[in-house]
Length: 141
Image 1 (tube, rainbow, N blue to C red):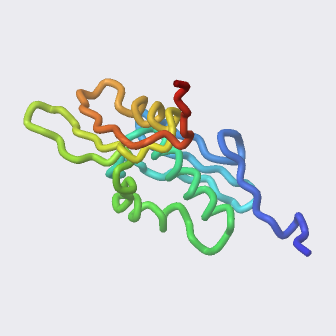
Image 2 (cartoon, rainbow, N blue to C red):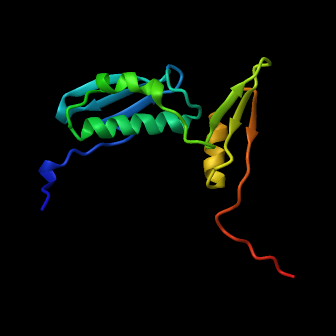
Image 3 (tube, rainbow, N blue to C red):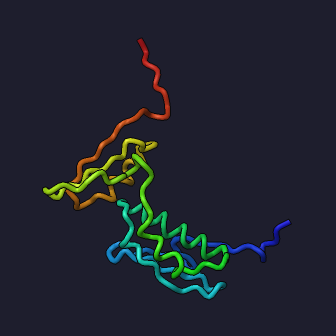
């Protein structure tokens, strides 16, 4: 039986937890029970999309919250190694005209595509989409 006192709980978006400054690309962590009050630079990530910054910050908070002996400072150098999974908001290239070509052909639903596209605001982009919907629509004839 696991006692509540043995669990390390992590809150997202409130103190204790993680807050992300998207302008500066910095995640701030606060977990008073563990004495954690630090920041993680997210700017070196080789991914696009606000959702990817949130995913990285929540993953880092989860690791710190588990209290397995890793600090935010230990996680920082690995940020630049993060890559989007193949065909999911994956940068194909940035051409000489400043257009970012992005492959999101494995988007699993409209909401996932929307989240990815919102991460491309203020960028000249060409998005490669495709695939089939998860739900089969029967045609009436």
